[in-house]
Image 1: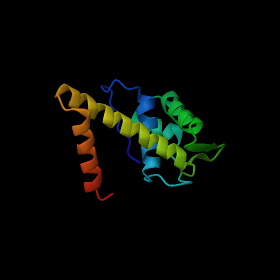
Image 2: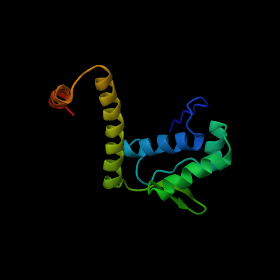
Image 3: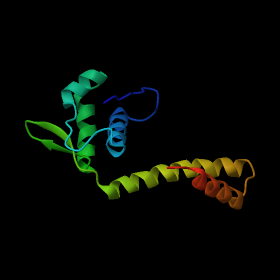
Image 4: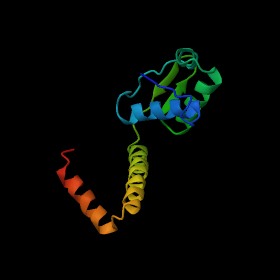
Length: 126
């Protein structure tokens, strides 16, 4: 598992860790029952505080992505399809919000934007 931390992003480090692990789980890069690095090992590898990695793991656990087994570590829980769908909607809303802002700044009306979205939807093989 590769986690990249940016000190210039304006996003808290624990949040960067949480988001990247969450994305890896939702994308299937981390499989069910797969062990995550220990809190201390991850902190050491990323050169961050143990408190930072502890907070990231605690939030992932409270969101239902991982479970902590005392004395054994943290493991990926089975993917919750409802959480996955909610995460997808969140990403879609962010991307569409940016698209709408660009369209408005450039005088593109709602019908033209809808037409473009429909075209892209039908042209995508996924």
